[in-house]
Length: 279
Image (cartoon, rainbow, N blue to C red; front, top):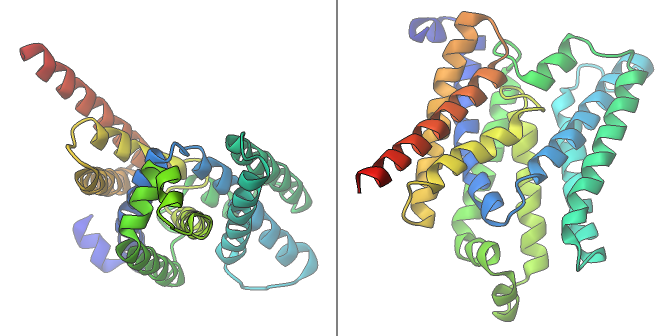
């Protein structure tokens, strides 16, 4: 496949996009897991599905936005959903975890309605649900590259603030940080990353690439930065072998990528347990 990657544009696009997502998803996933908000990826992925279904509906039934990439409307919905999550967190100050299931349920409801209005599932929608090697266009590559650069710059600039906010929000507030603005900035980055990941991993599996590599790295890392590095390494390996398998088996890449991430986690857990027994 290495030779074929350089022969066919769609394979090059899928491979490049996969590597970028394999860097982006766990980079944000570490902060998500530390903040104990692992389910936020599921909530925003379903909101993004609603946006994609809405885009397909207006294009098919109303003739609006002809030729527009449905991913853009999905990103819009995801960002709006992330903003509402932050708003609900302020409304339910003592029950902030309620914000995620509320938006999750809303996303599912909107998705069902728009999918029904668009006359059910079609090939395009199926590819967004489970990912596709052949569906990645050059515009997707550039879109994901811009999102990756944006996220990397923000994390580089605000690393200390995000680190403090993730581990101790009360101390961050007492230190004079604008926690409300940082929360919003972070969740918008997560929303964009989730929308960007859907071409390869798929809506139903995108949260797995944000959490499984982190779950594996936490077991063997000795610090926060090392956790980030190992999470990215695990994710890159899962994406690399997952794309190879998906191509040769002719299956959706989201499933193979996630299964390789699960295998990595199992191997880490077994290795860790065997190491403890020897001691």
